[in-house]
Length: 100
Image 1 (cartoon, rainbow, N blue to C red):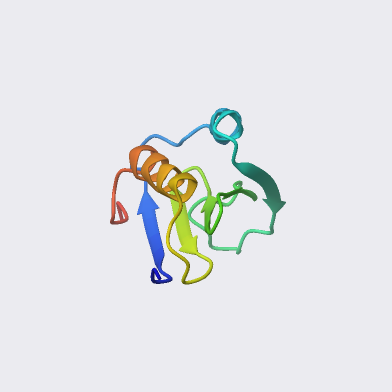
Image 2: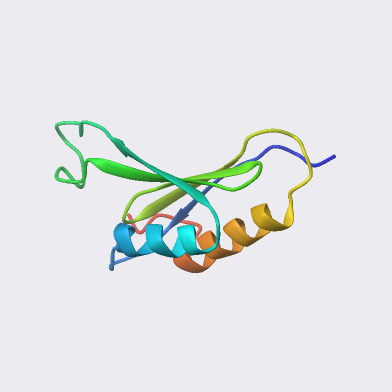
């Protein structure tokens, strides 16, 4: 049995195009869903009001232009599809630390 975990990955300087990334994730068979939210008054990116959610079997990623939050929903062993999503997120969001 695997362990549940939570990881945050970042992009520096250049934002990812979430629309293109969504199409890429769909081409790999991942479920996607958009979420709209209100931005805090003192946000670093006040005009960014959406997040793309990408789901594999037990792994889920919440994506913005500069950040990916990857969460393992339960303690099941990661599947091949989960491992693919994790690798794609590490490639797209290559930094383990924020630029700030």
